[in-house]
Image 1 (spheres, one colour):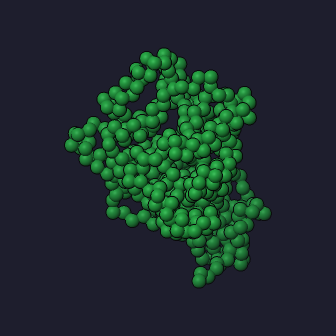
Image 2 (image 1 turned 90 degrees about the horizontal axis):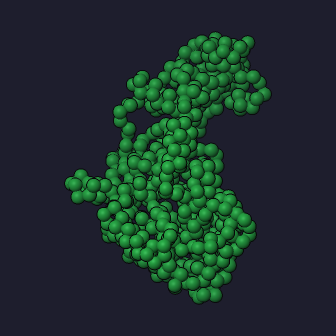
Image 3 (image 1 turned 30 degrees about the vertical axis):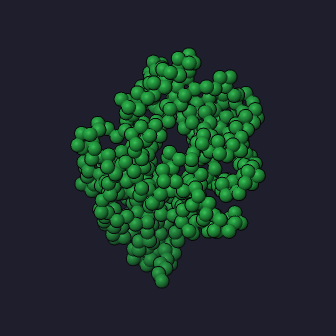
Length: 494
């Protein structure tokens, strides 16, 4: 039980909020507001004009109201000492709340302060100069297989529901799981980044608890303790100039991987010439969609599968209409269902019970179907075009969704007059050529590099002598049979 403190018991009481540095520009100055004889909600409600913390801020804003530094100098001195102690402890700018009750200071809470990108950079540089943080060493506590470019910081959350709840409240969170499953999709969408145990290359001895701040670097695969300043990507300045020059000289076309409206819009903003791969399976992982997908997988016969496919058709078609409309005539390559069906079925007994309840099926039937779908090597198993052979009704539903969406999108979506082309999926091609699992090789490939057995990770930099040679053979033979054949590469290689 925590006793309340009150800031509205007289003129020797007050309440306020503050940042240990200016969150707008990063200047090392005490920044905040307070009210005498008030409670916390009064500061943000706009009912009364708040007072500045410092005399300098009061003069800057030409306020007639005394600052905390002037009205309660001893309290201000104590609060300034707390400010310094918090930064020394957390090694970062803090957002604090405080109450003064009858001349005594009480600290209510502290958290990492949100800030603008320019402020984040200035805070990092100045804290390094002050000796609070090191400019030469990041506290890298683990290293994983890089999954995408960019970086993200957030508080550690181990549960997808909690990630969604905090995300809706405006918190930046990282969803940390052993591995992700379809049940996590809502948390994945809400999180700034995803960190999974499987696929790790190096793990240190640091214990991280829920609520602690982590940063993940998707390019380097680093897991860094604390919040590292980041800048949102933007096509401007010198980078924008260089990219415009590249556009004038390049022969290579660039399209984006996108399945959601927000990804498609972002792709257009960054100059993508179309969607090189719309992975339709990503459209089935959330909400009612995963339920209908599982109905199809758990069906006992073709009639049951077709009934579930009819539900999926509506969802697939509406998604594609939106994608075609956003891309406004630009090419969109739609990949039909690719992953093995077992990826849509959870693995734990509790999750299987939830699926059985949602589908109104006996648990034993769901358990048996999950066992039937399990594969020793799913990457080379029952997936992609093999599913279309076994369950043609799935392929029929998806093809119909594409054609109907193109027709409904009107001029924005037209079926290409010639659709034959090669698109090389370099992730899977590398796995089959090298005989390596991309998800597991990260644990031993660094040793191969150290001992000179490979020059670089083949899942990061394309193996031109092996995989590249297979692509060259396919290109030559394809164009010999069909001059002008279009070629594309889809993968995460640099």
